Image 1: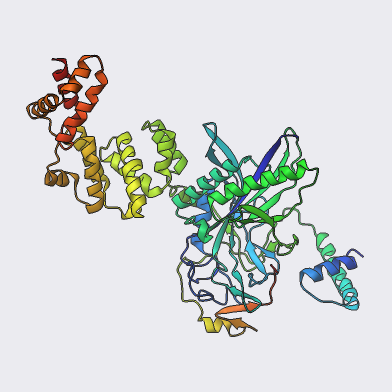
Image 2: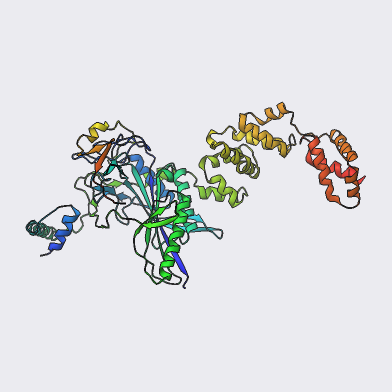
Length: 96
Length: 481
C-alpha cells in the first residue's frame, strides 16, 4: 500500500478530522485508489506540453483599487455561534 | 571560549497602502470598531470569489524593481493551509516557490559601519494577505476582529546564508528598507501600528566554522530600537548557552519591551505541513517587458542614491546627506531650495540645524511648516550680501517659522539690517575702547586675545547688527594705533 495508516492519521489531523480506526482503514483504501488514478495520469505522454497550474485559460483578472461599502456588522456576526462586543468569540487557543 | 559570528536573516511584512483589501473591496484603515470592514469574501464565506487588487500587485512589483529583483514574468497565488481563528478561510493566500514570488534574487545596499556600502541579498518579495486580530477576553475565550483580514501584505525576506552579521546592520537594513517603502509610497512604515513588522532569525557559530548554528526567531519587535536590542540580546543569550556547553533550541521567542529580554513563545502550532497548492480561484499573473518598463519609469530616486548624489555632486558629508534623505518631503524641500539658487551646504546647515530643531519642538512636519524653500533661500541671500549678520538671521528665521512672513519683511519691520557703515561702527568702537582702558592696556602688553572682549562689546552695543568683519577690522585698527 503506497499510503500508510500513519499518513492517513497525519492528514486527518491536519484537516481536523476525528476518525476512528475503521474510518481510517476505509479512507486508506479510498486514498490509495485515488493515488492509483494519478499513476495512470503519470503514464500519459506529456512531451512538449507546457505545465499549467489552472484549469481555465485566463490571466490577469484584476480589480481596480476602489473601496466599496463593507457588510453591516450585524450581518457579519449573524451566523457566528458566539459573539460579544462586535467580536467573533472562539475558545481560548493560547494559554498565557 | 571561542569567538562567535552571528548571522541574521530578516523577514519583513509591510501592509500596503491601498484603499481596498487584497481580494475584496472592503476599505483599508487602522483601528476603528471591530468587524466593520468585512464582507463575505474576507470572512471566507462559501461561494465567494476573490479578485486581486491591481494596485497591490503594482506596489509589490515596484518594490521588487527598486530592490533589484528578478521579476517573475508568470506568477501565481498559492493557498497556505492551516487552522487558526484569525484566519477565516482556513488558508492564507500567499506565494510559494523560489522563482514564483513576484520578485526574487534582489539586493539592498546599506551603509557599512567602516564606511562604504554593504550588499544585503534579498531572496524574495511576495504578495499575500494579512490575518485578523485575536484578543483575549476577560470573561474567557478569544475575540476575533477581521478588519485586518485580507489587507494586502508584502513579505520581504533576505538571502540565506545571511549577509547581516551584527545588530547594527539589522537595524540599518530595516531603516533603509523602511525608507525605500516610504519613498515608493507603498507602506507607511509605522512599526508601532504594526503596518511594518520585522521578524529576525538569529544564529551564531564559532568563528571560522562553515556550519550555521541553530536559529531562533524573534517576534513582537515594535521599533527599530527593539530590533537592534532584540538581536543583540539573542546573540548574547545564545553565546552564553554555548559557552555553558548547552545547545540552542530552535524556537520562536517573543520580545519583552519592558524587561528588554526575549522569552520562549508558545507557537500556534509547530506544523510546517502547509500543503501549498495554486489557488484555483485566482488565475495566474503574466507580465511583459513593456509593462515592467512603465513601472520602472515610476520609481523615484531612492534614498541611498540621493544621499550619494548629495555627497558626490553637492559636497555634503555622509552624515548631513543621511539626515536630508531620511524623509522624502525633507529631501524634496532641500532640492527645491537648491534649485531656487540656494547654496547646498548653507541650505543644508539651516535645515538640519534650526529648522529641524523648530520642527521637532513644535511637533510639525516639513509639509505643515511655515517656511517655504524660497523664503529660506532668500534668508541665506540676505546674509550673503551683508544685509543681515548670521546672528540676526537666526532671530529672523525663528520669526519666519512662527509667522510665515518673508525674511525681508521681518528684517525691515525690526530694523534689523546689518550696519556696514564704517563711520557708524567706528563711533561705537571708539566709545568701547575709550571705556575700557584696562583692557586696552592688557592688549598692549601682549594679551591680544582680549580683543575678542571688545568685539563682543561693540556687537552688543549695535544689538548684533554691526557687520562682524568690519567690527573686527576696526577694533584691531583702534588697538594698534
